[in-house]
Image (cartoon, rainbow, N blue to C red; front, side, top):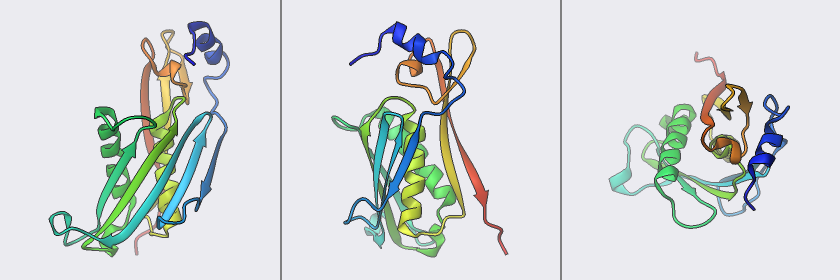
Length: 184
């Protein structure tokens, strides 16, 4: 069901400073080495992580684990937007994952979009972080994602819905490391 402009206006009134309710559950899937589901309002993403596992010679990295991220849309095949999001997710996970502890191996994250009601990228980031924790692989830090939009009246809306992410709104995301381990 498509949201009307009036519903969108009602959704922005008094809600710009609040996150939608969110929840997370880990260890949902039995076959992957780690899994998690993250729900943010009506947006939900499921992740399965595999590895460290044996890697093809062509993808092998001698000094660290090769990280592959696959983002599957709810319907259809991945497009340009999904590939762009995969790259951002991979770069974020590579920055915190201690891949040097597992050289010449592969770690694969498969994210499945279950529903998208806005702020999908931040939901994917949060799901990936929770999934990495479920695998037991040691990260150098944790990260979280949040999406903001700016409406035509220059009001910042935190955690926008799908309607609020459309023009004339401007949308941006941020990923922030929550803390870092001290290196000895």
